[in-house]
Length: 371
Image: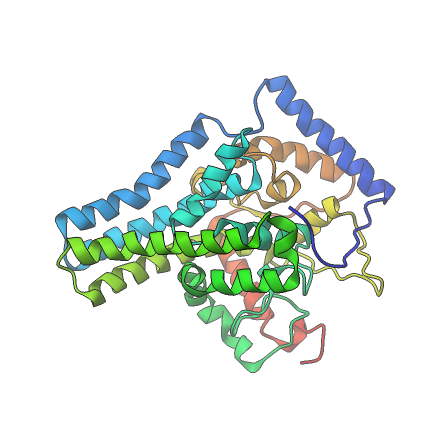
C-alpha cells in the first residue's frame, strides 16, 4: 500500500543498512534450511477454524436455545473472545499478505474483518500504512493520536483529566470495536478520502464506499436481525448482548495491541526540521516496539503472535506462526549491531508496566510540548 506524509527515514545509514542486510539474510536462510514456507501452515488453518467457530457457535446456541440471564451473556462474551481472535489471528495476517502465498486467500482472510463488522480497507490504511510506517511518530501514527480523554504520546498536549487515564483506559479499550463498527469506519473513510490517501490505495473510491456500506448492512442484518426475527428476546436484551460481545472483543484486542508500543522502553522519535528521522525505517521499529510474554504459548497463540511485536514490525510479510522461531535470530543480530531489543517477561507484568506508562503520560513530567 502507498505511504503518506513528509517523513524521511535515514535509509542510507551504513550501520542500519548492514543490520537489515544481515538480519534479512539470516531469516531467509532459516526458512531455506528448514524447507518451510514463510506463510501459514496447519497451525494457522486450525486456528482459523477454531476462532471462526468460537465466534459463530455461541451465536447459533443463542438463537437455537435462547438461554436467559448469565448464560446468554456468557455466550455473548465467548463471541467477543472469538471476534477478537479473528482480528488478532486471522484477518491481521490476511491484510498483511502473510496468511498465504495466494493473494485471493489473503484478501478473503482480510475480509473476515468485514464479517465481524469492521472494514478491511480502513484497517489497512490505519495499520499497515500509518502505524507500521510511522510507528510512534506524532501526527503520523494514528495509534498514538489522542482519543477522547486518552493521551498516548508525550508530544500530545496534557490535560488535567489525563491524570486518571490509567484507571479509565480499560473501559475505552473495551469500547474499541463497538465504536469501530458503528462510527469509526465512516469517519475513517471520509478522513482518508479528504487526505487523498484513499485514492492512492484503492482502484475506486466509490467501490470502497459501496463495500463499506454493503458489508455493514449485511453484518447488522445477521447480528441484530436474526435475533430480532427468530427469538423472543426483547430489543434491549439483544442490544445488551451485542454490547457485551463488543466489550469482550475490544478488551481482548486492546490488551494485545496497546502495550506493544506503550511501555517505558519505547521511544517516540521526532524528525528534524526537514522531516528526517535518525534511523532507517527498518531499525526504527526496534526503538519503538516491545515484545512481551514470549514464553506464554497461550498469549502467543491467541494473540496472533503480536506479543512478538518486534518480529512482526520487521517482517509483517511473514506469518505470525513463525515469529517465535525467528525471534532468537533477531535477538542475536540486534545484539551484534548494538541495537536495542526490548522484551518483557510476563503478560501481567506487561499490563502493570503499561498501566504505569499511561499513568506517567498523565503527569507534567511527560510533556514535550506546552499544554
